[in-house]
Length: 435
Image (cartoon, rainbow, N blue to C red; front, side, top):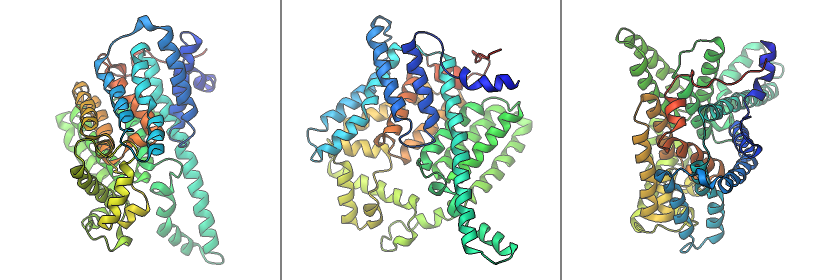
C-alpha cells in the first residue's frame, strides 16, 4: 500500500502515445494543479500546452473532427480583434487580445486531439490536488499571521483574553481574500465547486474521500463567496432530488437547511443583505462591501450599454468607460478600485457590442442543452453560468484559459467530460497502478 502511495503522483501523468501528446496533456495537468496556488504559476504550462497542441494540429490534420459549436470561440476572438479598430486605448486592447488567444486555439486543438475519460478525469484529480495544497498553504500562512498578531497584542495577559482576541479577530485572517491572497477567492470557489460536482456524484465509500469532501466544504466556507454559496445550495437541492429516496428526502432537507444556516452565519455573509439594500447611497462609502460594489458595477454597465447598444466601446475601452461613468455617478469606491463590470455578459457587451454578447449567450444556451441529460451535468452548467454572471472571467489569463478548456470539452457532441466523467460513476477506465 505504501508503495502505491509513493508512485501515485507518477501514475497521474499521461503516459500513452508519443511525446508530443504526452507533453500536451501533462502540461495541462500541471497547469490545473497550479491554478489554485497562484495567479502566474500555471501560465507557462498553459502556454506550453497551446504550443504542443498546435504541433498536434499540424501533424494530425487528417484526424480533424468538425464541431460547429466550438467555432463560436474563434468567432468571439475574431470579434475582439475587430474591436481594436475603434479602440482608443489600443495597448490595453492588444494586451487583452493576447491573453485571449487561447479562446481561438484550444477549441481548434480539441477538434484534432482525441481525449479519453482517463485523461479528462485526471484534470479533476490534479485540480483537487492543487486545491488541497492551496488550502494547507493558505491556512498555514493565516495561522502564522494570527499567532503573530495575537502575540504582539496580548503580552503579559492571561489565557482567556487571548482566546477572546482570537475569537474576535479570526475572520480578519481566515476569510475571503485574507485567506486566499494569491488567487481571487471567487476563482478558487469555482474550482472547488467543479471538483465537488464530480466527487459528490458517487458514494463516499472511503474515509479519505469523506475527509476530502469535508475539507473542501471548510475551504469554500472560509472563502466566503456568496455566489459560491448560492451555487452550492442549488447543487445540494439537485443532489437531494437525484440521490435520496422518498423516505430519506426529509432528512436530507433538514441536513441541507442546517448547512445553509451554518454558511449564512459566515461573518462576511450575514450582513450582506442589510448593506446591499443601501446600494444607492453613494455618500457612505464605509458600508460598501464587494457585493454592493458589484451591484453598482452592474447598474453602471447597463447605463453604458444604453448609450452604445450596437458596437460597444471597443476591446480596450470598456473599463475606461466604466471608470468615467463611476465618477459621473459618484461611485467613488468603484472608481478608486477600478472595478470592471463583474459580469462577463456585460463586460463583453461593453467591449464588442451586441454581436459578441449574442455569441457568448449562444455558447451558454448550447451548453445548457448539452448538459441537460442529468442533474450532475446540469450542476456543472450552473457553476459556470452563475460564475460568469458575477465575475468578468474573460479578462484575466487564467480565467480565459480555464474557460477555453473546460467549456469546449463540455460542448463537444460526444463529450467525454460531460458524458463519461461527470455523469457516470468511476468504473470507467481506472487509473493504472504500479506494482
